[in-house]
Amino acid sequence: MKVFLPLNVRVDNKKILFVGGGKIALHKIQTIEKYTRNITIVSPEIIDELKGKGFTEIYKTYEPSDLDGAFLVYASTNIEEVNRQVRDDAEARGIIVNVVDNRELSDFISPAIIKKGEMTVAVSSNGQNVKKSVAWRNRLREMIDEEWPETNQ
Image 1 (cartoon, rainbow, N blue to C red):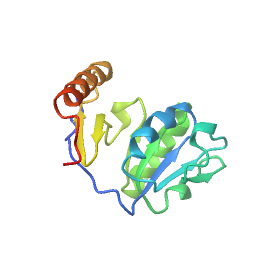
Image 2: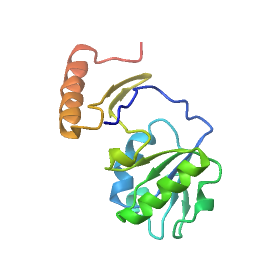
Image 3: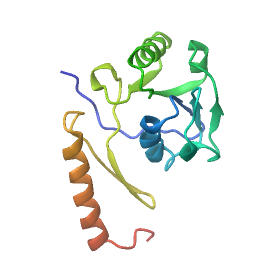
Image 4: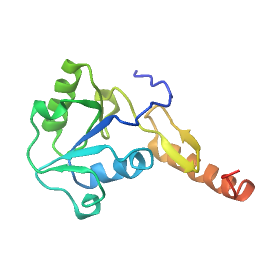
């Protein structure tokens, strides 16, 4: 069984690479963009919701050289073979990778996040029960909004 250590990783001035520019990538990018805009998307097509947001957009199929300079990688295509290739190439270069929706192939997973001002709360089930993590996060968000409406103090 894979075990994931919760931690906060410094991402300022670090390249976060997404291989894939569709709905699968969108979900992860919506969280990542709360912490950095240094996101590069490599994909033959990028959905409108990800265009023009200040990310580096590279319209092409994936090649191993796309990993150059990457700190974290998200394999977020809807093609399992491409995601596995990204994972294998990243592993060979010593870059940690998340294969979206496949914890067994991932070096890290993303928790359900609440971010208010400088505060962040993360909820994780070790990748075993995403729906439960999201439910816990949503309940905690309600509690935080009720108890601490102002977080800028």
